[in-house]
Length: 203
Picture (cartoon, rainbow, N blue to C red):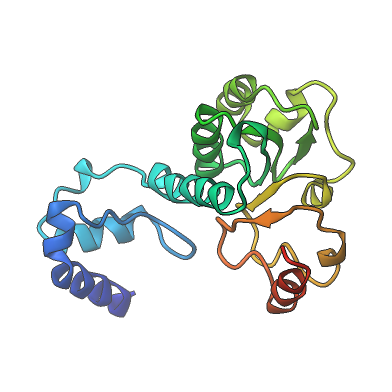
C-alpha cells in the first residue's frame, strides 16, 4: 500500500500541469478506486471535489468511433443498428449519445441478463428503469429478454459494442458473431485468436 501511494503521488506531481488544466481528467478503471484518484489529484495540487466521473468522456470516444465507422463504410447513421454489451455508466452514455444521432439501439445487457428487439429498444424507458432498478432493470423491460446474456453478442446487428467483460468474444463464440463492425469499449473484450479470425472475415 505504501508503494502504491508513492507511485500515485509521483504520477500526480509529474502530470500536474495536465491535471490542473483539465487537459487530462482521470477516473477509476480496473483495480483502481476513487481514493487512488484523490491521492494523485491531491499530489498535483488539484481540488478532487471538482473532478466528476469521466464515463461520459469515455462514452463520447466510443460514439465518435461509431460515427467514423459509419463514414468509412458509407453507412447512414439513421439506418444503423447497435448492440451494447454492458449497460453501466459508460454504456448508458453511449446509448444516449448514439440515440441523439439517430442510431437505433437494438440490444443491451447487464450482469443480470440481456434484452434485444430488432426494431429498436425504447432507450428513454431503458434509462429510466436503469436509474430505478440498476442492473435488475432487465427484468422490468417487457418481454424482450434473451435466454442468457451471452446470446446478445451473437444477435444480428450492424455494430457491436462490447462494454463489459474481458475476452467476452473468444474461440467459443467468435464464429457466431454476426456484427459487421465491432467497436470495443471494454478492456480487451476480444482474445487475440478471435480478433484475428474476425479480421480475416472482414469484420
